[in-house]
Amino acid sequence: MSLNTQLIAWRRELHQYPELSGQEVATTARLRRWLTEAGIALLPYDLETGVVAEIGQGASQIALRADIDALPIEERSGVAFSSQTPGVMHACGHDIHTTVILGAALQLKAREASLPGRVRILFQPAEENFGGAKRLIRAGVLENVSAIFGMHNEPGLPVGAFATRGGPFYANVDRFVIRVTGKGAHAARPHEGTDAILLSSQLVTALHGVASRNVNTLDSVVLSVTRIDGGNTWNVLPEQVELEGTLRTHRGEVQQTVKARVGEIAAGFASAFNAQIDITWYAGPTALVNDERWATFATSVARETGYETQHAELHMGGEDFAVYLQHIPGAFVSIGSASPFGLHHPAFNPDEALIEPAARYFARLAEEALQHI
Image (cartoon, rainbow, N blue to C red):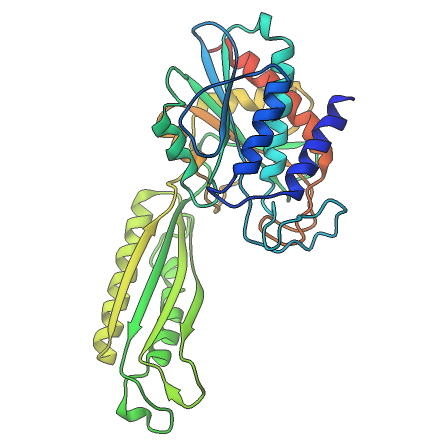
């Protein structure tokens, strides 16, 4: 069986049996079996899900990382190998990422005797809920590792395209929940209450003006209210409405400015309406900041292996690969997957033609990086 045929078969099996963050038990078992059958050594870290393997010998060491979890989405891609798990789908392409790094591991194993060091392979669980990287780091997987590399497929780029950048790349991710508490009343007698729905509506409008009116237009920032929940019948003004949303930034100063402004606006509305507004912030991953040297190096290797390389634009998505880069240098890269539907869409369908070239790229990147630590 050719490498490409094997990798596509593995990818399709992973795609058919997706598992949510922290529940990747069967995925872990598959990876352990495939790696063991290839003669690749597994490291005995204390992990409920996820796999860590190692190839080579010597003091120099770098790491390659893939994420293995899926999303709570009902698949509508129409492919013959669609998810067999109701309500769960690899809608972000982690099955692709896993297969790419599996392919790199197979090639590195084939030339293990000539490797100028060791390559640690991280198959990380729970990327989607931003907990997996911290879990692996606590287990000790970065010990003696000098640099780390990872990827995300990019549906907006054609197959054969590659992009990355030094410095900030992916965004700080913050989730917020705002609880607006007024005074319930009969819908025909609104003057007897404090209308939490009216207040919430005006608050949403005001919050969406923060990014355009309180932040320098040259700074990247997105603030989105994504959920509104209030009321349960047609003739009652509810006492409470809950808003939820996300803030995305690349600079800590901008992040803090926007958070402070949201608090000020909420306090002003609460005073004006004689209501109570409570805000809770939940921190996701911090901004992903690529090492300038390794980003340049990764681009150079991509060009050598036949990719059309380009300088990546700032990405407003979150990625917990950022946590690794807070501990050791490295680079995260985008590889074109040419899907007509974007990430997290139920019809997401990346082009499998990207898999084998990307696997060969990461094997070469690891080999050459070991010579430049």
